[in-house]
Length: 386
Image (tube, rainbow, N blue to C red; front, top):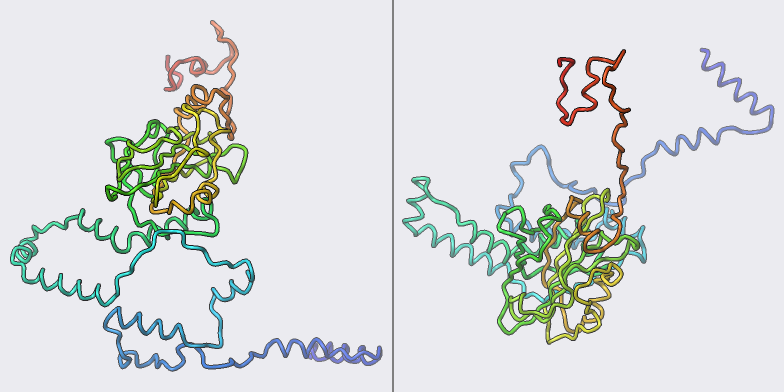
């Protein structure tokens, strides 16, 4: 009753002022309405109460074929990617593939090879005996080789996109790593370089051992760069190692354009990426413009841009593979700055000074029982027992 009286008073006041205050109510009613869809909704034809009666795909190939057909059909709604492309407008540019050309094996041929391998395994009595007695061991080397030959390069490309390697080194471009790099800084497993693992600067103090599969008459270029270490330019890099005109996979026989320099991530700057890039050459390259003095202990001379290097030789070299690791400051970085670079080490974190204690008194009057703990060499407290 009270609400009805308030509404009548409000309408009466509006009529007295000559203003019809019904616009707000009309807008509220319009907002409450839901517009009808402009076409059929997704999966509208599926009977969710009778899922067992639906036709099954029964194979991954049929599922992919159906998905491709559904992707080509025109629909009235837009996907999330289409919304993003509309917002970006002209900024949404397609990335250019600058990698090696690759002949994709037809999917039908892959299916035939898998079926032939399965039949061969079923006819193998030794394999059946090993499975029955639970003594069969999967050869991991063969599994890794098969992964590198099939889906490995595409997964590594996704990993490089995740870590922003293409964005920082080749903006506007990308490539698929077809050649696998095997890099080791020592005999320990923790000193091997994979794809984003942690290697300390002390472990990477000397040049690593690099191998890869290559033909004898081929030429290659190996580059080690860091897109995160530059102290003055956020877009700049430091070249740590550059070897060109490598015959086959004999890295030690190549032309050392810039000698190896250990990583030096500054204290307080977190993890730094150090990227190995392998380029395949179509012919011998003249690296006179990229050559550094030996030894080169100047950060100004080691300032580098991978994109400019590639543009300068893009008619002769093609990116073929990569590997990278991450490293963080340790005590060896201080020695690198002082001994090799001959400069004061930059520190980007607060170093708390040691606690000040006044000179020790021989007869401390009015002090607590743990007074002597301040002046001990060790850190183990005595809990007031002397």
